[in-house]
Image (cartoon, rainbow, N blue to C red; front, side, top):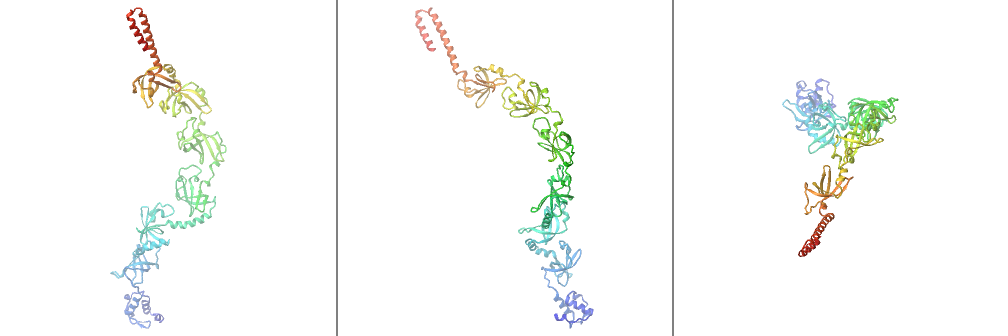
Amino acid sequence: MEENKNIAVEETPAVEETAKVALNASVDPDQFDWDAFEGTDVYGADVDKDSISKLYDATLSKVVEGEVVEGVVTSISKREVIVNIGYKSEGVIMAPEFRYNQDLKVGDKVEVYVETAEDKKGQLILSHKKARQLRSWDMVNDAFNNNEIVKGYVKTRTKGGMIVDVFGIEAFLPGSQIDIKPIRDYDQYVDTTMDFKIVKINQEFRNVVVSHKALIEAELEQQKSEIISKLEKGQVLEGTVKNITGYGVFVDLGGVDGLIHITDLSWGRINHPEEVVSLDQKINVVILDFDEQKKRIALGLKQLTQHPWDALDPNLKVGDKVKGKVVLIADYGAFVEIEPGVEGLIHVSEMSWSPRLRIASDFLKVGDEVEAQVLTLDREEKKMSLGLKQLVPNPWENIHEKYPVNSKHTAIVRNITNFGVFAELEEGIEGLVHISDLSWNKIKHPSELVATGDSIEVVILGFDEENHKLSLGHKQLVPNPWDEIEAKYAVGTVIEAPIASITEKGAVITLDADVDAFCFNRELVKEDGSMPVAGETLAFRVMDLKRNAKKITLSHVKTYSSEEIKAEKASVEADSTKKAVRKINTSIEKTTLGDIDALAALKDKLEKGE
């Protein structure tokens, strides 16, 4: 063959065409007009159809059906791709099989699967898809192990992400791995080809997870380092609002993100960043701080405008009245905005003259328009305190005239504690009725007598003007029943009374409607040794009476077994004996001598009894 190439060829069209057939195999011998070329001398030999066919067949590749071979793209149309694998005819592959590769062009080498060497029409049938499928799993694993970038065709949208064709295998692209920024419309990626990185493979179930975001992040990491290295505090840059959260706004500075905290968005108070910016909005921001290692950038928006406190009326002073709008309520007070970005705090103690502890929401709510007085003003610290109660008269200024000592009034119970009741005479004027001043009788808790919201009659007992405290009494409105009780139930008095109830330690005995006494178990035993029951009426001796403690102690035992009782009985019996003896002595004179012995015996008997 090398010698033949050096032989001169006649410069005739027929000879040139025949040489192309023999050497290049670019023309099918069956399609030649062999009658025109029969007998032509080429390369110093006779040329015939059989010899040319043999030369042509020698240049063809051997095609085996079911094998994967490499071919060259020779033509591309919307419907099909023509591929030459070195066979006598070129193969046709449907264009959708290459949809994952939008950059396919003539001359590219592709792998194809030989389905049929010749169909009924003599056509070579190839498949690129099947070739990819046969080698896809190995290709996927190789790409994963070598950290290679692969191309994939986004087939459809699914729950939580997209389905991507990679080497003929359906891989999952999570929505969070599509881009570094949140994607609101997944459908825009369907029927597109993108670069991916294989991030996870499940060998058992042959599941593949890919990411486009990983490629972007790798590229951005380098960009971030370059951008951050050029940043300076106070530098003003233009950026695009990338994401909005409840705590701030992320701004894209051209490859690196920075955060504007919600407090750095506006000098005024805002509830959500959306009140100031919107997604995809281009804004100017100032660099507040940055960390090159952590690649964090703190941005500010409000810093680009003058601070509202700097523009505050220079004539504003303590004592002036201002108007504003309540922008925030806390338990301890309310913040009022008197100008955009300028706020003052009304502490709950400055909302009312009432000494009662309350919360700010009892007086104000967000959105209220209020007028207040400036109590303190610090322009350097940009702080201001306001007051509401200062705009109304102080009810304590004429307290003595309005509520003199010993005067009687009606009050409303506002609060009940263990030690007493707080009663309000009017807004801002409250007093304490101590538990000892609620009732002449002893009570365990004020709730036994009153409830919150009840009206109660009180008498003014005293004042503490400096601390705005008022001492009230309730029991003083009625006579002290213990004045009569002390006289009626003196110690040693024996009475009869019913047992109201039985306890573990003894019995409660009702003496009068409002007076109860107590008898311990050891003093409750009846003369026959049994114990009484509730409702039973017995005789009791008053053993102790404590006026201040409002306690009366009784004893039933002492009504029948005390030394005093025995002495009284002995005295009574002695008096009876003496009377009997006197009667006998008186009658002796009238008695006969025969009766003397009998009378003597009777006297002796009586004396022995005494």
